[in-house]
Length: 490
Picture 1 (cartoon, one colour):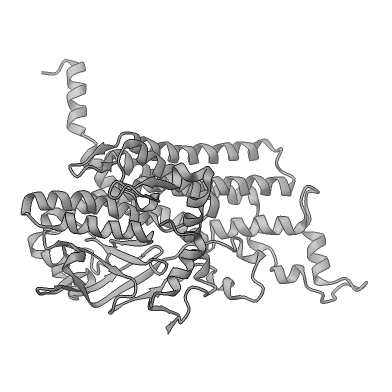
Picture 2 (picture 1 turned 180 degrees about the vertical axis):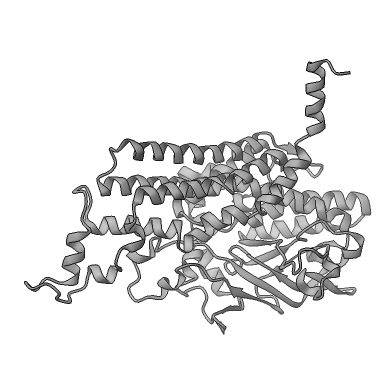
């Protein structure tokens, strides 16, 4: 079935998800003011699937069941599917100006699908059939699934098995005829609290010495032994302030990251998709990373569209929209944003079928895409801050703008003073100017910056991770051969 946003929110209430924040258990995470904006973001991905004008992007026929499903649960069947994925992500970014959190699960589905097929081919295991059955269940229920890859890692100079604390990489601690028991944690988990399920993958290529860490499985969010600790974000407690509205910048939507802890969690065999096949851990990591690096050519571009629009509005409201340097900065922001989109579309257009039948993006171009995403959003927000002006970070609170406390000799209030001195162009009210500047503060420096700037840097791997892959896939020897042939070198 295709859930609506409201149905999705209600489905979360049925889970016994264990969430902790500021050292205490959160009894009702669905309605918590700091968490709810991120839930609203995910809800948008459900509601858009019911909008006829977006049906071609948001829905698709399942390759497993033939039923109409949300594209976030789909196995890509063509290069066109890959392109539509990027366009869908741009749309969702435009609608929320935030991280809508379902991309990681979608990218995990496609990576696990093809990797289990090739694992079974070598070892005669049953992982692929298990995963297909699991994914059919995900599609049928229209679940949101957290793709969990990043481990705490401890001392980066040491392999998983060489760590003083063996749990700093998630590992198998027991195997029996019913399943496995795992212990450890996954960091920086986008939307994990808002997910129905978690699909766990190894965080790096494992060796035989580290085979207990080569594990892939799926568990419900409320499985016994699993709990989450919510991650802080800049300016996050503004959401708890009375009458919070204008000062939030983006009141309705937001992102979410948390630490997911597995305290001896039992996983039945039908939900295990890799168990010590360490020689396939690298394949799974590389394929997932490729898909997820492609994703950033869509989601961050959609958010960039909104930032560019907000910067242009700030220029209008400041009365600076006709200045040539402002126009040039908006052009540069657009150029950078569309370059990111070009990379996302290019790696999709060059997609090819895996042995399992679903489509893989061009890995080199996907890594180039993400490498650009680690840089261009920072320049986009720098230019947005430049256009907005210093008031973006020095403006009094929304409470001051409405205060009736008298301060002037004629009885004028603090609110009167703020309304008088922060008025600019007649094309907008003082409140409209407040709103757009607070939005830019939030997206450039506040809680949304976690999802736009810092996630652009470290999400789907840090810049060095992409450079390593670019070095592997750049075919320098082939390029040398081209130069030799033209230069006449035998």
